Image (tube, rainbow, N blue to C red; front, side, top):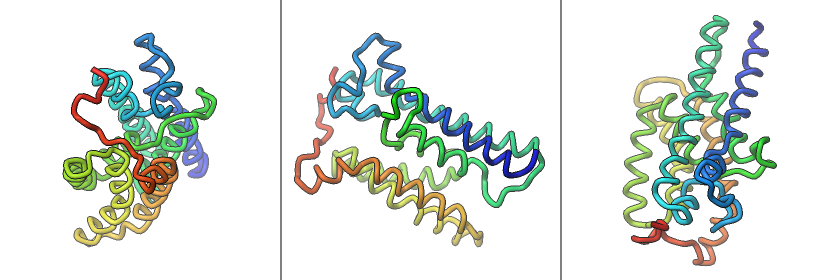
Length: 214
């Protein structure tokens, strides 16, 4: 199969897998009201935690990260079978479309989540060291801010820099990887535009003890 067809197929696969929004599916599985009509209206982990509690939130995390991991594995396998080299890990390419599918899911009227958990699933496979660094920084950020949107936005902003720094320290040229993680960051930040507005107005909710809905 020609390289461009393989690339097109993994992009399509990434989008279709990304469109399986875990928050929406979990609410249906647990016979709960559509999460998009509850709380903030966002079909993501934070809103699930606030509205339906830890169990629903955990299932959402597992589903959102799991679909991203599956997309990366499929993309790598397809390029391995085609024997066509790509200028970067194909997981980055399919991951970009997983994020697009997650935010604009074709199965759910193009109303999805904000892309944070799928992005983590992608980075976990394509750059485990970057994942670990961002996770540690996110834990520190959450400890001081107690605001999930702040954690998500800062992590998104740091992702391209951390990617480039790891390449620099290893003597590797990660230009393409840095550029595509910059696109990841732009998508995630754009999806948080309402949170950014609330942060500037001082209206963004913090994750207080006992606010999980349980």
